[in-house]
Structures are given as C-alpha cells and as structure tokens.
Image (cartoon, rainbow, N blue to C red; front, top):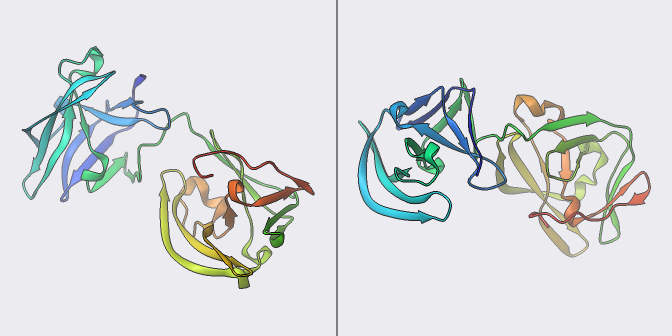
Length: 242
C-alpha cells in the first residue's frame, strides 16, 4: 500500500461546516484505481464520537468507526481510524467516508466522485483520423475530425461532433454519470432496427477545465461497438465497461 502526502489543501464539509481542513492530507492507495484521502487527526475539526463498530483490513489492521458530529448534522460511522495499524504512518490519521460528506474541495475547487490520482493524466488531442462506428452492421457515426481522449489505463476514446452521428437514431436518456477528471456526462439511447442500446452514447456539456476540448462532443464505448480507425476494424478492448 502506497501512502503519500498531498501538496494540495484539502477540505471536507458537512451541512455547510468544515469537517477537516489540511495542508498535509495523505493519499492512501487502498485500491489500485485511485487514492483515498486520510487526514491528520489534528486537522479534523468535527467531533468524533466512537460508534462502537470495528472493521478488519488485512493490510491496515483493526479500524475503529466514529460518528462525525458538527453543530447542524451527524454522519453516523463516517470516520475510520487505525490507531494500532501495522502501517505506522496510518495510526494518527482519519479517513472520512466520501459519500457521507456534502462537499470536497482541493484548494478552492470541488472534487467529485473520488480523489484525483496524481498519476492519472487526461490528454485530448485534435485529429484528422477517420473514425467510423458500426452497430449491428449499421454505420451510426462517421467522422474525420475526432478529438481523441487519452486517459491513463483506459483505451483511447473518440469524441465526435454531433453532426457526424446519425442523430435520428438517438433518444435522450435520464442517465448521468460523473468523472473527477471530466465532469458530468449525459447519455442517449441508440436504436438500430428493432433493438435499443441503453446509454450507448454520452457527452459532456460542461466538462471540467482540463477537459474543455470535448465539450459537446459525443462518444461511444469502444468495448461495445465496431470501431473502424482509418478503415481498419479495431479490436474491442476488455475493461470494466465491457
């Protein structure tokens, strides 16, 4: 397990009150995909009340749960400590459950979904490569002006102008998802013949600043379509989106 000190000021809020405010937040990779914020105990402003709950981690040891109390709200069992952890650098730290907090900030900007991994990079490059997308043998998109998004540990994503899609095949979906690097995505269902593919196409209408190049463009999961790049059919990648 990797533990690093973040150079950013990190704050967590509950009911409009500061729960924690730190310039020495630890990034702890509990899972390989992204880190978790841990705060020095001295940087936690909320009251931590023992919740009488213990949970075991094979790597971190026995964790003690605490209710997080501020003047106007309580988040039950939303804090976790490992005071006797075999990992000495975790013993004086507190982890706050992400979903239990109302707002997270790095410096003065909100963070959504989970902490950003400092080793994950998102690059968006304009391209003149020919991208054609088929579903069930029907061409649903054909473009010579994609923006290609390269994100660490994911296949390239081809974002296309809406005018290069068969818009008559799309129906707005109520689905929304969030990404800490790109923002909030909205979706369309896609109907080919008598078959409808739910949430087959997405767009970021107001992406985060670092992903502004994909604003208003549409994308398909490479894992679920036949994607031709410069006339050559690409192998479908295998990811958790497959």
